[in-house]
Length: 222
Image (cartoon, rainbow, N blue to C red):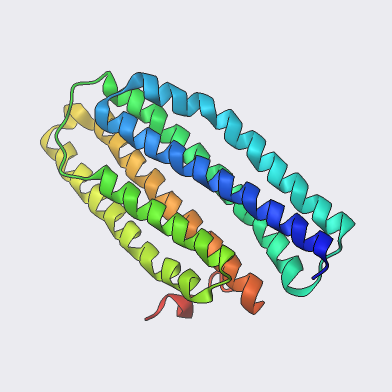
């Protein structure tokens, strides 16, 4: 790989890493605001989303410049195209953090309802998936990418359990339906974060192996 292309890709990796760090910070902040009923923190998460949007545009512009100026081929071309998609997925995770923050503001103004569900645990697991998917990108590891795809099922299962709990609570106390639906929405947003981690892992597999595995049921089998 020519030095000028290597330098451009290294710079791109740094920007993508910074974007992922800020997205993680946003998601953690939204869950902390939810847990502590902290309206001020939730508002900060919403306000900072503009920074995520700006960074996403910068990464996309860098990808397009590399494609136009350096005309990469083979794995370098697949890497840049993968980053284009991953960049968009990270921005969407940032949007999900905003959605959670908005629901945190709503719930903080309502009477607290006890529901036996640990959003922090689900957040920890989803962020671990995001980190592992990005590590698979930086280390060019399909092994890690396949792990992400299989581990996402745990997040899906947690979301299904949340749905059942909310359904049971609504039957017992239908007057709390609006609050409970917001709780279910938060679970769904976290589940979507896991889906985006899977998207990233699938793009890494494409980058390295040159094959598209989306919609391939066999890849999800043990």
